[in-house]
Length: 328
Ligand SMILES: C[S@@+](CC[C@H](N)C(=O)[O-])C[C@H]1O[C@@H](n2cnc3c(N)ncnc32)[C@H](O)[C@@H]1O
Image (tube, rainbow, N blue to C red; front, side):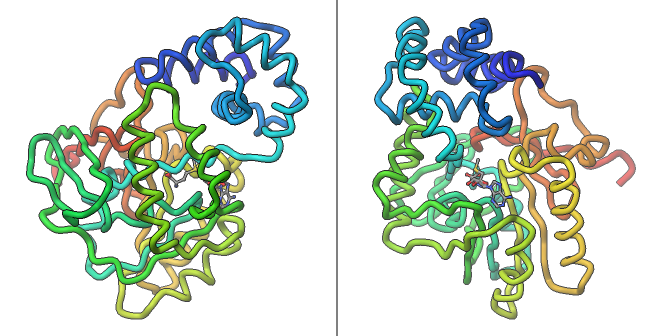
């Protein structure tokens, strides 16, 4: 995708109706050849809309209106560029646990969780958040600072009880330490303006995680995975999962990663695999869908062992269970 098209896609498919401020900025950038030329001077993976917008905010630039944003960003391009090169979009969205929970709770308990692309590890605590699906009862520990709400459609198997997690660990190229204030401020800048509920959720999840920081291993998705799986305690179902990781892997790395997870499963280990990725990212899931994808909204596809079970909002805000295939 060309850079201008990428920014337009981001505006129209990702932030429209969620962050009008970002929609206006991204459309402005897409139509501005000078800004596109600056962005094109960066390595391709660093041209991401969310990375640029977060970098400007992190540096204290204005983002309420395109003209002011543009003027400031062009003037401070050296610093913006340096920040974009030094940092990654590592948005850590605890809300995605609402998409994962029905899948996790249906597995044989207890669980040992291995998250790949864990960022600060906030999705490693599905058992520490409170949840409410539609108007149903709240589930989860009463004292949790985070309540995840989720609208459902179809026969979502909403669990009555949270999964029992006996062990958890994550892998990331660049793990974020929840105790590092600057790193947490960067995470906050990755939340889109106007999404106060996401910001509150992030702050609550960081507060919770700071009391018991997760074990995070620095490494590449594939390279670090076998050792971590082998380190999980016997007697637990090992769940290898990832959400919003695939955009960072090119097609070959993605295929290698999927083949590795399949080989771990084929090796006789009690490993289950949950993926929660945007619909274009794991194309082998698409022919298995038993419902139409939403027209203009980006949907994630929660899948177990390579079989899609649901469609979900990118931040866990909605969850639609797929009908059983005809004849099953
Ligand atoms: C968008 S964040 C998602 C974080 C978390 N899974 C969530 O859903 O909130 C993607 C994370 O994947 C990490 N990542 C990207 N490429 C990776 C790789 N090859 N190996 C391990 N982690 C990677 C990034 O550093 C980033 O923290």
